[in-house]
Image (cartoon, rainbow, N blue to C red; front, side):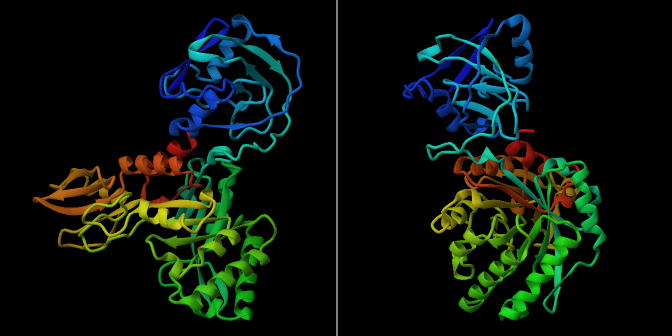
Length: 450
């Protein structure tokens, strides 16, 4: 671990034994950040070309203001929540830690780093920064453009808080013939209206869902063309940012090929810059029904539904890791996908905002997180428990396993997992099941640092 100490108008760098092997002065702290998942949530580096004349920074006129924006002294979070008007430079002027949302900057802190805490003098640069060049060493944290937080919304989005997501998928558009049908089009207008609060929000129509038949949509080129045109019409008419396809599921090699052709047709038909995404199941045989290598190229990202692993009451619904009594896990699924997918940022880790109870009444039926909080979590004899091997929460009653659900602990584990493995973000089903934003807010905070 490395941390910064501010004293007067100088900064000292303290580096313990974990990071002292990084002897390159200009890269040491950057490397520490690259291996620390907490810092990756808030910071990403860029390479900038700067030509400015430095001024000496004095504690009286600048340092205090900078400390307010850049929390330099918090152990374990080297530089956290950098403001949109402040950069912090580590090492040479071309190694800069920047806020990942920033486009133009007006200032930079510059100082030198040497072994084991030798102080570096800070200098102040007043300039308008150019756009960043691509970093040329092959490494870039997923946070370079921000982790995606994709919220499915199954119903009216009028109550949605758009500040805790980057993308919202309205569910669902269904299919009649080869046309997309939305039962309540006004919901799309409401969804797009959320951009008044979050202008960068991506608003997407998800088509399909459990039980929706694609057989008459993807089986011929004429059907695919008609369906893609219908998708494009909805995008154009409601100013949407893209289309998500949830096809559950192609059943053989022929349908697998049809689905790939359908997705390519949609991509070719939508206006330029619109998103094309899919949701795919968990498990380790997915490539039997989805051509993942081809879909990686076609789609902007793939959302992996790492849930509904068990509906028998014998195991967890959405465990991150295996136990002796589970058949699937999120980790197994993602590792399997990565034997085919080349870019981990194209994979979005899906998780549920619900659980299931097995106690003789409505067994295996989804319980929203709101329902769990109201009637089950440490209530009615149900004891909240934690499986530290699976990294999953469950309910225990009468000396027996009675339920499985998503918790803040499970979300923390999955958030760290996504960051550590360089995946593109988290998707969840669905926003309306957590009215207090206990889980949904936690996801955003974990990935986006808000």
